[in-house]
Length: 274
Image 1 (tube, rainbow, N blue to C red):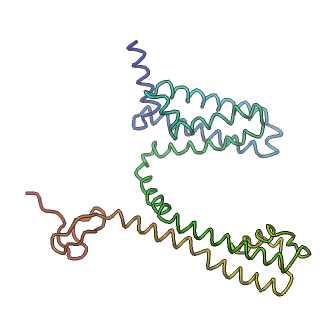
Image 2: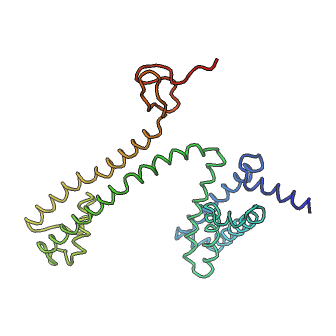
Image 3: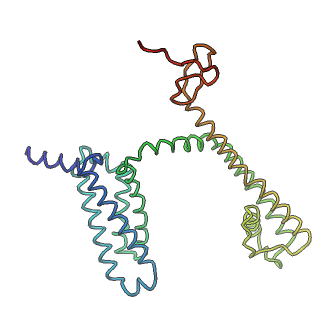
């Protein structure tokens, strides 16, 4: 019994602990297998390759699916809390890497869903010890949360504009110029407002061309709005991470992270320990 627990513990260290030699080796091999499986999926999407090597690629893909299935089973087996792992982010990602391979038995096109295995490449952050860099993502998330209401208002305003412009173009241009319905006009307004301009529908009447010019000019001014909102919130989020310590001289209470001296008066922020 003790030997079984000891083997299970060693397996846990290898599978879950990326800061050990065995763990880094296991994760490194796993990442290579994930990359190889992604290459196989991409190659199989090429018609010429699929026609000549469909069976070979299918067998290889089944081999990868079997490897991932065994790996998932090992993680459940050696995890102290299997259910906690199964419903964790990485546990769900590991499961999603297997499900498309099984679905491909019943629906052939489901094999292309295997491309979601690329999400498993997030493990590279653990292998290369890049986790501290992920903390910088907190600034982005804070900026998104802070700008959520402003962006919602902006999107509602844009939706209102494209609806108005699309309806106007439907009334002015009409079906004879390609604006066969209000949704078609809204589609044109979105394409024009975002300055994409596919050119599949163009106004023919002078009034329609005037409105089109107005929409394009409006589009240039609108594009900068969400960028400015997000940038301002990002700056606020980074500023909020400043060191909150009162300067003993000028009483300034917000300083750069890891600052030792006040940026206003130059006085030391902390007492010397003798």
